[in-house]
Length: 123
Image (cartoon, rainbow, N blue to C red; front, side, top):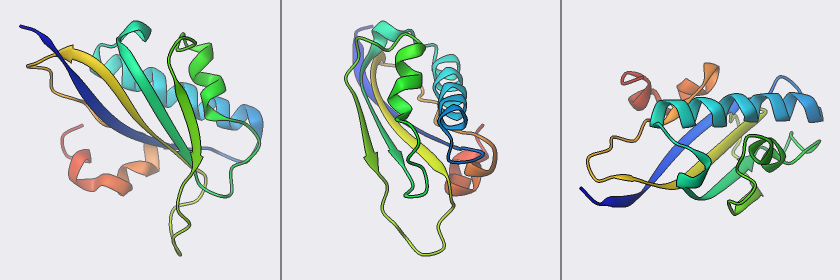
């Protein structure tokens, strides 16, 4: 069966706006997403990260590079500021190749499961 292009989403909340807290949260998110989806760095096409406005101490892409995604195009951007939204959130959308019968496992960690309660039931 031929591979096809997939996209998967995920999120995690950083403990605070400090470089190591952002890196630790991102490492957890990317590692868990890779494990749940059976992915290796060479499977990725690109990854887009967003952070809420209250996170600015480090780029999440730094952690992804540490995990072996150093040859993958990575982009960091600012999430929309919506009143009452969850603070200190790092989101990602990853594009990767996997078999056509693959089932993407979206990865929302901890309190961010509330962001996609519809997916949480399947995790």
